[in-house]
Image 1 (cartoon, chains in turn orange, blue):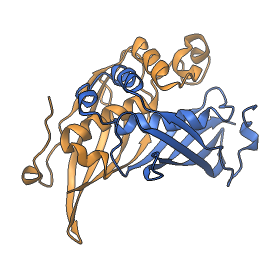
Image 2 (image 1 turned 180 degrees about the vertical axis):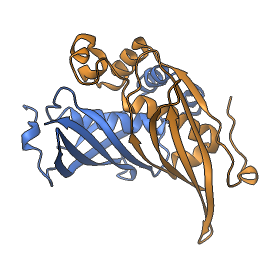
Image 3 (image 1 turned 120 degrees about the horizontal axis):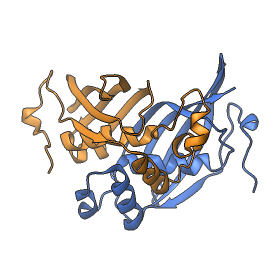
Image 4 (image 1 turned 45 degrees about the vertical axis):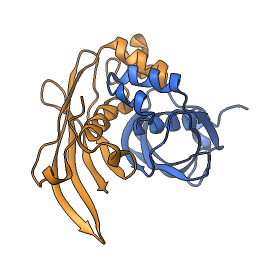
Length: 141
Length: 131
């Protein structure tokens, strides 16, 4: 069910509706099949075990999809046709991690009659370690 | 055509343009994989990250991605909503390639157009590759 924020409800400092996902190796394999990204670091456990990462990791774009889901839940179609994001992948998400995508509204600006909502966004694992951090901007209207 | 080797990727290199069709079955498979937003199927709109993911995959298939490469950073701008059934044309070029210690950082610029030649997505991806 959508938890889209009403424009009149959007205020600086508000939290975005968080998205929580538990990831398994099966989920990672399914994402590889869907996206066509078969990099062995994601799906080949014996290969990944020999790398400095020590095991398979989820695709960065899979974790980013959870953050996009959060933005869609918050801003609806405005995210699809006026959304921007800039993120860094800080740490890998691994099989059996629980990832929480969260964010908050840092500021709201009006420029030439258009409203821009500036958000800080992040994804953390169950230990509170940052997996992805960055910012997003949504053009409303 | 053989994929371009990683060594051949220099700043300014332009990837061959490629296209992909975002059918309902493709999007249904994507939504199942990311575990949410099934309502987008009935709304008929492509999740913007799906478009970005397929653009990244399309570009990465034209060069030999070294084993152990990982995604380091991503910028994306969604310019227009895309209906399911759209054919996307994707282009990309290398805008930065630097060595930082044991890693190469490769930054790719990505642009995607719909079948009416309207830009629907732009972005930059940074990939870290073991040197």
